[in-house]
Length: 182
Image: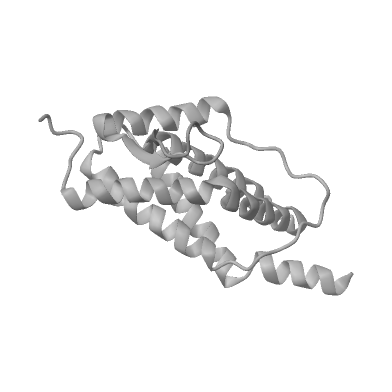
Protein backbone atom coordinates (compact mmCIF):
# COMPACT_ATOMS: atom_id res chain seq x y z
CA UNK A 1 0.00 0.00 0.00
CA UNK A 2 2.84 2.38 0.90
CA UNK A 3 4.55 1.62 -2.43
CA UNK A 4 1.34 2.36 -4.40
CA UNK A 5 0.86 5.63 -2.50
CA UNK A 6 4.45 6.64 -3.20
CA UNK A 7 4.05 5.75 -6.88
CA UNK A 8 0.88 7.87 -7.14
CA UNK A 9 2.58 10.77 -5.40
CA UNK A 10 5.58 10.57 -7.72
CA UNK A 11 3.31 10.52 -10.78
CA UNK A 12 0.91 13.33 -9.90
CA UNK A 13 3.74 15.60 -8.73
CA UNK A 14 6.28 14.68 -11.41
CA UNK A 15 7.99 17.54 -13.22
CA UNK A 16 6.14 16.59 -16.42
CA UNK A 17 2.74 16.64 -14.69
CA UNK A 18 3.41 19.95 -12.96
CA UNK A 19 4.52 21.41 -16.32
CA UNK A 20 1.37 20.11 -18.00
CA UNK A 21 -0.93 21.42 -15.26
CA UNK A 22 0.78 24.83 -15.48
CA UNK A 23 0.38 24.86 -19.26
CA UNK A 24 -3.25 23.72 -19.10
CA UNK A 25 -4.01 26.42 -16.51
CA UNK A 26 -2.35 29.02 -18.75
CA UNK A 27 -4.46 27.90 -21.70
CA UNK A 28 -7.67 28.07 -19.63
CA UNK A 29 -6.81 31.53 -18.30
CA UNK A 30 -6.08 32.76 -21.82
CA UNK A 31 -9.47 31.50 -23.03
CA UNK A 32 -11.35 32.84 -20.00
CA UNK A 33 -9.89 36.34 -20.39
CA UNK A 34 -10.98 36.77 -24.01
CA UNK A 35 -13.05 39.88 -24.56
CA UNK A 36 -14.05 39.36 -28.17
CA UNK A 37 -11.88 42.03 -29.75
CA UNK A 38 -8.50 40.28 -29.96
CA UNK A 39 -8.32 39.42 -33.68
CA UNK A 40 -4.75 38.83 -34.79
CA UNK A 41 -3.49 38.69 -31.18
CA UNK A 42 -5.90 35.83 -30.50
CA UNK A 43 -4.55 33.85 -33.44
CA UNK A 44 -0.94 34.34 -32.36
CA UNK A 45 -1.57 33.51 -28.69
CA UNK A 46 -3.82 30.54 -29.52
CA UNK A 47 -1.12 29.01 -31.72
CA UNK A 48 1.34 29.37 -28.84
CA UNK A 49 -1.02 27.92 -26.21
CA UNK A 50 -2.23 25.03 -28.37
CA UNK A 51 1.36 24.09 -29.18
CA UNK A 52 2.41 24.21 -25.55
CA UNK A 53 -0.56 22.13 -24.37
CA UNK A 54 0.08 19.43 -26.94
CA UNK A 55 3.83 19.34 -26.30
CA UNK A 56 3.50 19.18 -22.52
CA UNK A 57 0.74 16.55 -22.66
CA UNK A 58 2.70 14.10 -24.80
CA UNK A 59 5.56 14.24 -22.28
CA UNK A 60 3.32 12.63 -19.63
CA UNK A 61 3.64 8.97 -18.82
CA UNK A 62 0.52 6.84 -19.01
CA UNK A 63 -1.21 5.85 -15.78
CA UNK A 64 -3.95 3.47 -14.72
CA UNK A 65 -7.05 4.44 -12.76
CA UNK A 66 -7.26 3.69 -9.05
CA UNK A 67 -10.98 4.30 -8.45
CA UNK A 68 -13.97 2.79 -10.21
CA UNK A 69 -15.81 5.93 -11.23
CA UNK A 70 -14.57 9.24 -12.62
CA UNK A 71 -15.24 12.60 -11.04
CA UNK A 72 -18.14 14.63 -12.35
CA UNK A 73 -17.28 17.31 -14.92
CA UNK A 74 -17.24 20.88 -13.66
CA UNK A 75 -17.60 22.97 -16.83
CA UNK A 76 -21.26 23.70 -17.53
CA UNK A 77 -22.97 23.93 -20.90
CA UNK A 78 -23.35 27.67 -20.38
CA UNK A 79 -19.62 28.09 -19.76
CA UNK A 80 -18.82 26.00 -22.83
CA UNK A 81 -21.27 28.06 -24.91
CA UNK A 82 -19.77 31.35 -23.71
CA UNK A 83 -16.28 30.22 -24.79
CA UNK A 84 -17.65 29.02 -28.14
CA UNK A 85 -19.44 32.33 -28.77
CA UNK A 86 -16.46 34.51 -27.80
CA UNK A 87 -14.09 32.70 -30.13
CA UNK A 88 -16.66 32.61 -32.90
CA UNK A 89 -17.10 36.37 -32.53
CA UNK A 90 -13.32 36.96 -32.56
CA UNK A 91 -12.69 34.87 -35.67
CA UNK A 92 -15.82 35.79 -37.60
CA UNK A 93 -15.59 34.48 -41.17
CA UNK A 94 -12.25 32.82 -40.35
CA UNK A 95 -13.79 30.49 -37.76
CA UNK A 96 -14.60 27.68 -40.21
CA UNK A 97 -12.21 25.18 -41.71
CA UNK A 98 -12.54 22.04 -43.78
CA UNK A 99 -11.47 18.62 -42.58
CA UNK A 100 -11.95 15.12 -43.94
CA UNK A 101 -15.00 13.28 -42.66
CA UNK A 102 -14.31 10.44 -40.25
CA UNK A 103 -15.72 6.98 -40.79
CA UNK A 104 -19.01 7.56 -38.97
CA UNK A 105 -19.74 10.86 -40.76
CA UNK A 106 -21.46 11.00 -44.10
CA UNK A 107 -19.51 9.62 -47.03
CA UNK A 108 -15.89 9.34 -45.89
CA UNK A 109 -14.67 10.93 -49.12
CA UNK A 110 -16.38 14.23 -48.27
CA UNK A 111 -14.93 17.24 -46.53
CA UNK A 112 -16.74 18.51 -43.46
CA UNK A 113 -16.96 22.13 -42.35
CA UNK A 114 -15.92 22.52 -38.75
CA UNK A 115 -15.19 25.48 -36.47
CA UNK A 116 -12.17 26.52 -34.46
CA UNK A 117 -14.52 27.86 -31.79
CA UNK A 118 -16.18 24.47 -31.21
CA UNK A 119 -12.86 22.64 -31.07
CA UNK A 120 -11.36 25.22 -28.73
CA UNK A 121 -14.39 25.13 -26.42
CA UNK A 122 -14.13 21.32 -26.31
CA UNK A 123 -10.40 21.43 -25.50
CA UNK A 124 -11.04 24.11 -22.88
CA UNK A 125 -13.76 21.97 -21.28
CA UNK A 126 -11.46 18.95 -21.02
CA UNK A 127 -8.53 20.93 -19.63
CA UNK A 128 -10.63 22.99 -17.21
CA UNK A 129 -12.35 19.88 -15.86
CA UNK A 130 -8.95 18.26 -15.36
CA UNK A 131 -7.29 21.25 -13.68
CA UNK A 132 -10.19 21.79 -11.28
CA UNK A 133 -10.19 18.13 -10.25
CA UNK A 134 -6.37 18.08 -10.05
CA UNK A 135 -6.35 21.18 -7.83
CA UNK A 136 -8.34 19.33 -5.15
CA UNK A 137 -5.08 17.69 -4.11
CA UNK A 138 -6.36 14.14 -3.58
CA UNK A 139 -3.70 12.03 -5.25
CA UNK A 140 -5.96 9.12 -6.27
CA UNK A 141 -8.42 11.53 -7.91
CA UNK A 142 -5.60 13.53 -9.50
CA UNK A 143 -4.23 10.31 -11.00
CA UNK A 144 -7.61 9.15 -12.25
CA UNK A 145 -8.32 12.54 -13.77
CA UNK A 146 -5.01 12.35 -15.64
CA UNK A 147 -5.89 8.84 -16.83
CA UNK A 148 -9.32 10.00 -18.04
CA UNK A 149 -7.81 13.03 -19.76
CA UNK A 150 -5.44 10.66 -21.59
CA UNK A 151 -8.33 8.48 -22.76
CA UNK A 152 -10.22 11.55 -24.00
CA UNK A 153 -7.05 12.89 -25.64
CA UNK A 154 -6.85 9.73 -27.75
CA UNK A 155 -10.58 9.78 -28.48
CA UNK A 156 -11.15 13.40 -29.43
CA UNK A 157 -9.57 16.41 -27.79
CA UNK A 158 -6.06 15.74 -29.08
CA UNK A 159 -7.38 15.64 -32.65
CA UNK A 160 -9.49 18.75 -32.13
CA UNK A 161 -6.51 20.61 -30.74
CA UNK A 162 -4.35 19.66 -33.73
CA UNK A 163 -7.07 20.44 -36.29
CA UNK A 164 -7.67 23.86 -34.76
CA UNK A 165 -3.95 24.46 -34.50
CA UNK A 166 -3.60 23.68 -38.20
CA UNK A 167 -6.43 26.07 -39.08
CA UNK A 168 -4.98 28.76 -36.81
CA UNK A 169 -1.54 28.17 -38.32
CA UNK A 170 -2.95 28.95 -41.76
CA UNK A 171 -4.44 32.20 -40.45
CA UNK A 172 -1.21 33.04 -38.65
CA UNK A 173 1.13 32.57 -41.61
CA UNK A 174 -1.25 34.31 -44.01
CA UNK A 175 -1.34 37.37 -41.76
CA UNK A 176 -5.14 37.36 -41.60
CA UNK A 177 -6.72 39.64 -39.02
CA UNK A 178 -10.38 38.86 -38.35
CA UNK A 179 -10.98 42.39 -37.05
CA UNK A 180 -10.05 44.01 -40.35
CA UNK A 181 -12.84 44.54 -42.85
CA UNK A 182 -12.05 43.36 -46.36
